[in-house]
Image 1: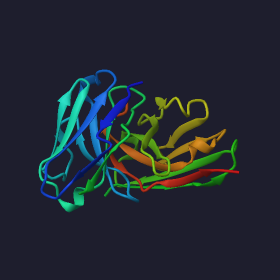
Image 2: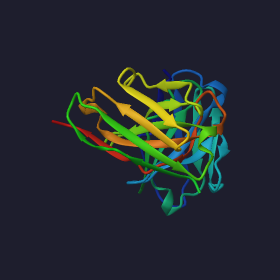
Image 3: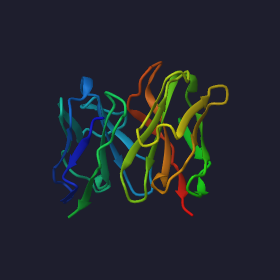
Image 4: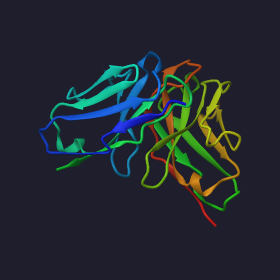
Length: 108
Length: 123
């Protein structure tokens, strides 16, 4: 089983700042099959990024993904008020399709 | 538009059983695999199970293997999760999620999610 470790656990930033979230895998993720989701309280997760770097339909270009192998990054270039939420990475290169434990992005 | 509506959650005693359902609409159900993902109160997401578009391949998390069974009825656009031998640690909101790639034997990322149904395992 691939274990995904996200850091930091909590990130405190202000609107307009840049956010960098990390997701590290315990072994290489096949074909860079790594996705990022955003979840707000009481809501279902929302797909942001797939294939490590491809934006999902309708996702603003301030969201970008990068990385390969075992190290992946989600970057939000200029935080908007609606971006404060919890972010999860998920690998789908091999079953079980594990999630990271999440990074909470909070307003400073 | 794609809609996924879960039902069947509730309170059950440890050792009991429950069957969750997910009604799908807005896409050609028999072309896509489906996932169940759960979230314990105040915790993160945990992938639970995947079923191939035709029901012939199924994958499970180790934590539920042998106790949970994923199935689907393509004639009714329905996904199910039969949960047996339930434990307190199975308490969670259970989401059904549509896989993104059609005709695939394996799971990929999920592009649409339901709102979830709460399962509480408690005596």
